[in-house]
Length: 80
Image (cartoon, rainbow, N blue to C red):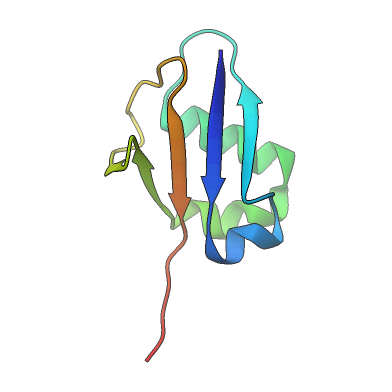
């Protein structure tokens, strides 16, 4: 299956803002995160602390992904 990934903030240093990945069989968010870490190992620290949303709702890393899901990955932010 193919899903769309959207990344924000510092993750754009490691990935395009919007891209597709193909998944084989059933997968959950944690599996996608592992795949992204394999694609770009330097992103691991940020991915480990990022929040995930699917269909514009925050979700847990055990959420099972469905065909055509759009996954939004938001790294931690700070500021004043």
